Amino acid sequence: MIWHEGRLAFERLLRRLNRRPASVEAEVRSSPAHFVAFDLLRIDGPKGEVARLPYRDRRARLEALFAEQQLQPPWTLCPMTLDRDEALSWMREWAPAGIEGIVAKRLSGTYASGTRGWAKIRVRHPSDAIVGAVTGHVHAPSSLLLGRLDAEGRLRYVGRTTPLPRELAAGVGALLQPRTGRHPWTGRRFSAGWGSTQTLDAQLVAPDLVVEVSADISLDAGGRWRHPVRLVRARPDLETSSVPTFG
Image (tube, rainbow, N blue to C red):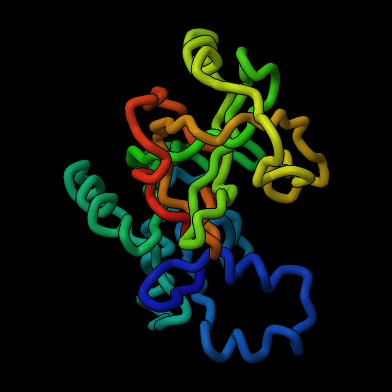
């Protein structure tokens, strides 16, 4: 993980992938990465395999390893608690710093490679955005492509929704209008997802409908949502100027 200007900067970590060391040397000096250990699967020695042990035992060995080796940053031990209230307080207090949420594990659970043996609980909050395009039919959209106005009044893409339930899709579709004339996103292609080379078959709409969404706090460097957001409801009572500014 990388901290930059008091906030978790995941996008800076991504920029270092598949790049030559010389091209990131200055960035490494200005924003060094920390190795955060949250589990232990193997240690040195003939009995090094510990993945089959319950999580409570793996955690105890991980804490003992940090204590024995007196590990200091950039080696960092991820905090752990058995207190639900304390975990919830972490979610509230650390969200402004860019921490997405917490991971819940069974104390008796062993580590299963290739499967999810725990639950990730994300910090989510309500937010508003402008519908600029849809996938599917305009009046029965499968998902919404969302934007916000920048300081110059240009509509900038900020992310898309998860697939819409039929009832929500019908309600929003009844409020959408096909684009007329030139659209701010004319000619733009939208990626099907992070790391994907596929593009979405998007239908541009008149960018005048505001919607409320439930979003996590994962943003890229440009202020766009890294993960799809959930549509809560349409807000035809709001003007596009009331939506938070892009970035």
